[in-house]
Image (cartoon, rainbow, N blue to C red; front, side, top):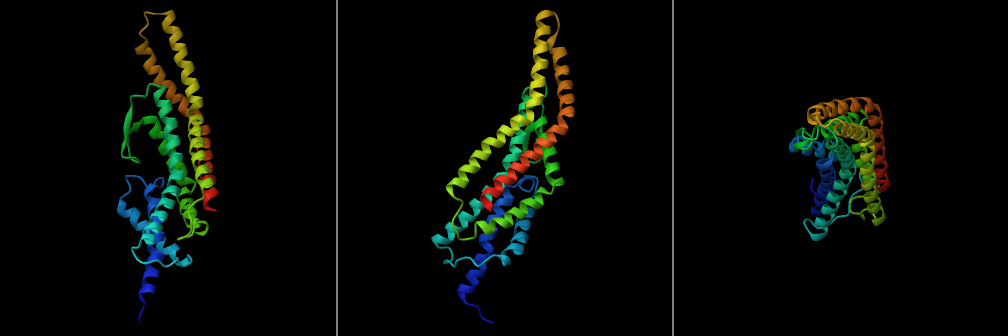
Length: 256
């Protein structure tokens, strides 16, 4: 059995271009894009996902191998994949932002731990909320939904076609601003309560100057932060779920 060069190039492109989109999306996706996940595992998952999706895709336009149009298509697919992964990753960044605000307003502002998802030191409250969001994301099947939306994107943004429109990209930018305001709202109840406690401590220090405010205020702020997190956790879980819903809607707005 003999195959022409055009057939071989077509088969290669039908696999390489989708792999560029899927691989770049998995490199930045929540959980899967973590520094703790081996690049070999991510690449293996990307190749297996491509092998499942590529045969069902329409044949891409044939281009000369390694020509300028070939590289342009490859870069386009990588950019689309990065946008898909970034759309959900920014939700986790908003949750981390809310945790950092709480840490900065409490006695836990000095406490940092090695973040297994980022490979760097982050405030302990931010890491706690991020791990909580990760567990919720996995419990809701978010990793499976992500792969599903990634496969659907080939229908609305086919390989070799045009990229996202300018209006869709602007909508994605607006989503970034809205999602960080959601992170602020996530931390707002705890921030208001901590502010009230700090104001009360300030009044006490003015009325009793001899009181060692550091010895009293530090453990009090620490205990108050932990109690407030415990009380507010059900509402926080609901808010984090709402942030995920916004992420899926933003993803659907330019991949459908």
